[in-house]
Image (cartoon, rainbow over all chains, first blue to last red; front, side):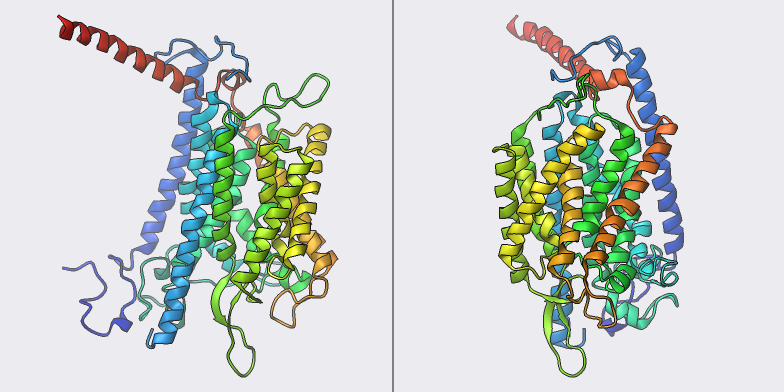
Length: 76
Length: 465
């Protein structure tokens, strides 16, 4: 069993191409990676909206809501 | 890799780009520090994370499609031809990973592809990727303290992994259609990175609107001082340092440029036209100096503008800094700073644009200026080594500057921001903006601190008894 596309480094090194394991699986890796990337954006957008909603109504155990505090925007 | 000379050339080139990448990393460190310094304390953490997450998001998307665009789009496509095959740059290519350059494992790439790209692809991709981070980071600073992070990150992918690399394919690739037909010359990216990012930022800002409190009722602008001027200056110094790597990365370090008989090895610019590290070092420093001197004068010694003007001076001269005389570079840098400084305040007053870090000015206006000026200064010069391509002209450069700043910068930025705004995804709620983006974190920190203080008091009593 070997995940490599070559047997060893003892032969003609100039014949060796890819060094990474599972050569031939590149397209599957790309599909998985693109799904991961898109999933990240969706999760992030949802989490950010949820965070704003909580801050606006003082949820999630907060002491105050963002709407209840008044700060001079240039004071801090 | 079968003889010492070719091996040394390949491995030197590989190492050269690798070093430029490490240097350019400092640009991003500088942008993060700079933005945090400019933002108010109530927004520090979100400001930092907004810029920091450019690194992973633009990296993966530039791997997915950005690198391929550079090689596939030089003809437009549709301007002077179709898409160009670039099998070494698609993300599923075996050459987009560790490879020794031997026999291809698949039919998608040729033996010639593997020999040429195996040791260069990764570092060359990374050098362009760091340009991509820069393009996105330029936009980041302009819209601090009121843009939603998620919206910004979508915009960052758009400018960092799609738009700027399209303009690079058009105006930076040795066979780009703008180089061929317009004689477009932009050796160190006045337009290719800076003008497009500045234009994109302006498009976003037009839709995003100013920070609350930025403008008085009579329309005049208030100054929102940076929370930490030391961070601002350290950040800009780091960007200066990283800019050295940026300049070096725009060169090819060693290549035979003799056409016809004979051999002549030289460093070249991105178009494979001859230049040297010495030439660009002269001009980098002289344009930095010209920019800082003019910035100090026009801003009456304001540190923020003096440092920023150093960058703007370099950017204003960058289009022709492979060919200018150092004193020309200095004077162009100084003139570019005068132009961008006046433009910044005119646009702010006239259109109520709140460009928090002066990004549109330093990158957009100075970059636009630099591309246009190169058309006059280098009028009639070959834009590239190919004698069949157009020469440099003022009208070719002006058209190029409009394409960079307006067509590929401002317009997509404006439209993308409009779509995000229509989806209520662009701007944070007003109450959050007033309370500060770090409002929740601050409250949590206070809770944690109170809890620890209470615990210390309780446990301390036990020790005393």
